[in-house]
Length: 140
Image (cartoon, rainbow, N blue to C red; front, side, top):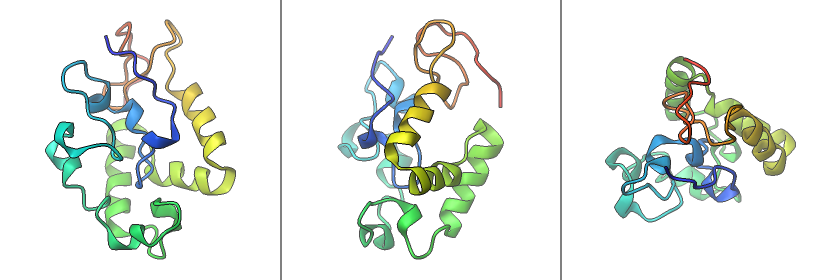
């Protein structure tokens, strides 16, 4: 099983997603490098992400949607709604935590939230289970 770390500021996407807990990043075969990585290994929907290509984000100093003049825009609201409903995670809450408390605090919270209580592996946001031991941590 893949033992890649899920705790890195480089893995936080513009939308607030921690790419380190994504199934595409965590898979053993052809793992995705995360939103800031090369597009060749990314799933198609990530390689052509409208949020990453957003002209407004490119005008922010941080590259995060939370610092955009249009935050939260329709795209972020739709993504947030889907992730809240399907995976129990909020992109908007992630971004607001980063804005209010800094990246370090956010990453520390992510470490706690997404670490398996059984083996210390990383929990996949899309499966709700540890990618190391396979134990279900929560269900959406």
